[in-house]
Length: 188
Image 1 (spheres, rainbow, N blue to C red):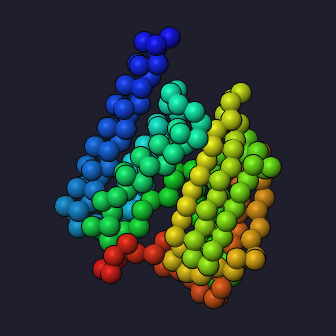
Image 2: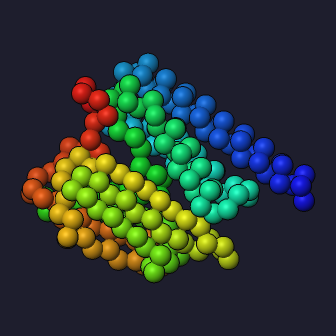
């Protein structure tokens, strides 16, 4: 059992290293091709999503520790985007869309336990945390996002379905945002 745990820890470390290397490669390639902002963020988001999925599935440690490691690894994978003027990528299980009145997030996670849902909204920040059944086990999901525009903190709706969840935030001003998250530097 000890050997199996050590092998699982080594495999997790190897996946984290591979994810970091892949993210560095994507950042370097995007930079050499002159891609910045959305294009660089999109490329790094794929690498970060892979990092998140790989680390979140590790066998070692408790659920909260694995989720925290996965979030940290996904964020590390996107850290170089600041130099390219892009925002950090969303976790791979979140997509978003907008209209003039609202911004909506789709959490592509099956088996969300609605009673575990915790949503915290500030005018320019969103934090969402929940548990979902992954087979017989429960898995924790957490995302914290800085928002490019202001939202109305009292006007938040959500709907949990069998395969996903939608979260809708009303915008303070009826305008289209040019990006979801604010630029990470003055040039982005």
